[in-house]
Image (cartoon, rainbow, N blue to C red; front, side):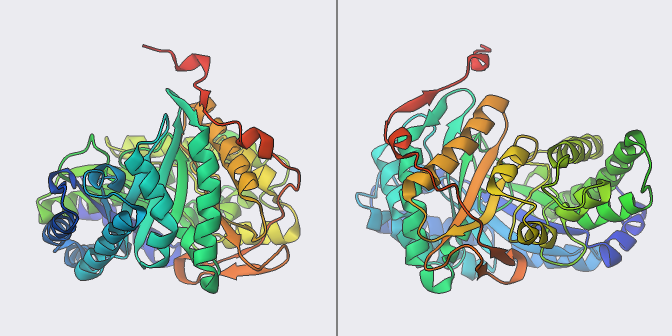
Length: 454
């Protein structure tokens, strides 16, 4: 159903408006690699990844050349490693060897990032889950391309507060372990509520146990395209505004569908989903915050921001689902601070705070994302921030996430620098009041009453 004429229609978007396919992510199941012998397990993992993904990067380059569509990243996601390593790993150090194997395999096949150094602990932690979580600082400080995620809660189960408390400590330890590089290890670590099995975007991607042996997921991004389209209807009413966003999202998603189908055909691997997420970059004109300003706000964070973001997110999804039968993953607007120049400007101007970002999370995909905070922030405070975000996801039956970066040795008014796609972030103030007694209660926050839909 997709032809070259549709690609031609999007040429201007690609050349002038920063439209890109942000990632082709190849999901690979490692369940058949499980072994009680650690060396054998690592060998199995390396061999499986380097075999299944051997043509991924070349295929992406061929599609770029054939259709003129930029594909920014080629990535891999794997089965959550806490599940794969449980039989062989008796210590956190054992798990860290798997991270090194993943990194080695990623370099061998040439992908940018590999996700799935993960644990799913929304109700409780197995011994393997806890060992993997405690190994994260070592794993992320000794590898380049490995990304880690932990799912801490869900709408059906509730929030595992023991794991929330532990992750506050782990995030600080990861920051400390990578402090020489502005604590960039935390850039590759995200915690979720309601994590989807098929998300192609890092750091949260993993290959869910409900997935096939291998699958192709594509993530498309086009905030610059949406902003340019809205410039043409400046001053029009909300009906015109919504129709414009919807039609633009349709076209952007069709590009993703084309790339996904081509990659699937060339690699002989089933197509999974297209994730239409307005994921910004530090490039001028490629900003979700700029879209909000085009809708009518002086800065992202001004009164009306949550309503404008809700409108944007909903229309993007409505346009996307008309363009592809398999829209999945997160699919919405990302509002990372460090990766979006408009968000950085809003923070610098004092228009945007952590509390406002938290409110915005109620209506978008990932709210507290790439957020730099002072390095002396307490672990319990980080856990409290995480708990608030998990509660939003649990009650609203949506995916929410936290990717926060305690900048060791730095404070409010300074900034952290990551470069490239990840940009830089001004360090934001954190509420100074303690939540330690709350976080330390232990146990689980139960699921809300509307979770009982059996």
